[in-house]
Length: 269
Image (cartoon, rainbow, N blue to C red; front, side):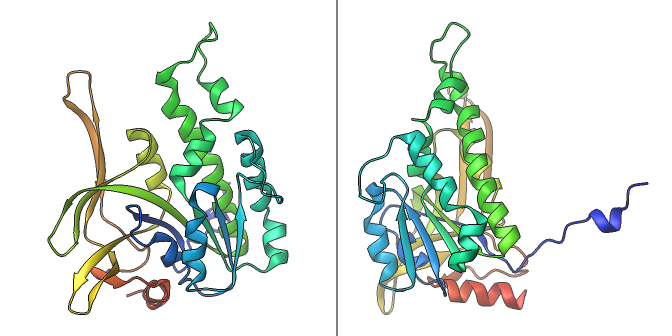
């Protein structure tokens, strides 16, 4: 007989496996710097400015570029993915005593993936030509491997995982409050698959207030994508608002500081 009690896995609602969404310059990297403790910051060379922003809030960040080697030389996409998985080795992370891992970010990761040999091979027709229609499935499969490895590290070691993603804001209030936005990923299925992976999703955007303008975690805006047919008609759609797993009542606005998010997760309100 199947022993259900021994096979049920506990869901750690207080843990943090979080997708940080925001437009370019909204404050995603700075937000990573507010996570307490030693943090492994994985980034691409095109986003090196994010490291400096994160370190302004946390000088206990170890930054590793995934598409450059230790001497700063550019790596090919296949080499970059290999380097990323090497950095996500649970034993290495445990030995380094990291409390959090940040991957900045999804858009850059997707660019690397689309240059790898497995991705290109997955998009070939039987005649050896590139098949554009195979791209979404190939991208989702490759993204899943990276996110699954992050989940393994999260589940085994209990480290926090933070991943950034760019959004395109399509509707906003005068004070900067985001009403609608869509993830900047190549296609409906890729965006839907990636977003479903995360139990925690926060959206950061700059807002105007009595004390000036600055980044705020906005938890009420609608994030989604549409898939249209050749005639322009909408075939399917998905949408969601930011969420914090285990938090019964999520405030509409939260200070752009992960210590505030962790307080909410710990209180489980």
